[in-house]
Length: 575
Image (cartoon, rainbow, N blue to C red; front, side):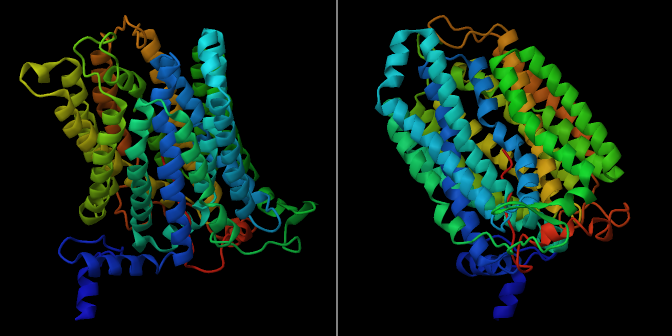
């Protein structure tokens, strides 16, 4: 009887099946038992803490808080979106962080001390924010005028970036084993990705409960205290070694002792020198580009971004196999096709009656907390829905369906802005809740899971951590560029998003072009560059492509040093 139950709860392709409503207790137990067959319980605990308290906690709090905080300072939507590009740039730094942790073990460990340093950086950012708001410096800056407010906003951006760096670093420091185990055990499917998303959504659900009301009340200092506590949560698990690693020594072949406590894996670097250089440059270019675009000139930043993307594409074409390049090109196109105008939408929905007469005029309690809670519940359901029904699909149809549905979801925004819902008697709060919180949140989750699986399956033997970081970093880099482009679109459209004389007339046109037409017309053709394989199959046949373990013999010790057995893995956070 027990065997029959296990068989019924196991995916036909071997991947752990999600809990079902028919047998919630037994199916949940079976799911975690099968999941722990690929990933140790200690690692799963570390991953859950990281995702709940960092990705779903401090990171979600900072990204959500940016709208009311910068709006309170009188920062417009275009400028706020530039700030968000800078704040989220550490996610595009993942390639650099991944390569550095692989090549420079600290006190014998590739991940442990890089993780600890990132936690300290996050804590420093929180401490500065608390100092600003408890000393009264923030209130004084607002009273002193625009220049002082601008300086305050710049300091807040740096502090938020430090908090986000902690989240990005903790994600990337686990990706090597994650990719390695998905390559060695493709039958695991996307189970660990669903687990990660579920934990992040749980943390996000709790976070959104208090962000909205505290923002409406102006209690930003309380939110910074909460961020500080959340940033501390991974400290003990990381110190205790819950990220499994093998102690590295300078006696290993190719290992060089740089100084006391720091080693250099020269052998790995020499074996794959060009990929490591390209991957490192990719990671370093993101924050520099974000800084130039935010604080110098947007046009110069966009031109620089185009040159960098072409450089990365050409380098990838010559370094990696053709199948890898086609998937890589598809990722670049798909992420660039999603031009973000989210800041303009956020400013419109939360605008005052003076700014947008007879508009939605949502409070932060509704816009952030109510819709956030509903969205988190929907996201949980979307994860289970994906694992139950879509995880056995091939990559192409999954991506095409989610692209089409995601584009159609923007119709809700268009209806509200054009006030068509009011004409037929549907309140803004009802339509927005059903549309944005339910429809769009579900689509975002359904899109994120297959992309995460693709990133993991692109990692070649011998360079799992570095190449995984490269693909994720490029995706985040392209997302950052699309956000910068969206900021330019908002700015060049002539919209006025703050003050008492707002102008959102161009917003419906931007929604139709950049959120509905471009993703379908550009994104769907790009999907066909990805091999049409099942998600439980290998995406790239590395032996057929001429890239084998033997070709990475020197690089392999660095990857093997990330764990002690075949049941340890790490996570990817794609945002």
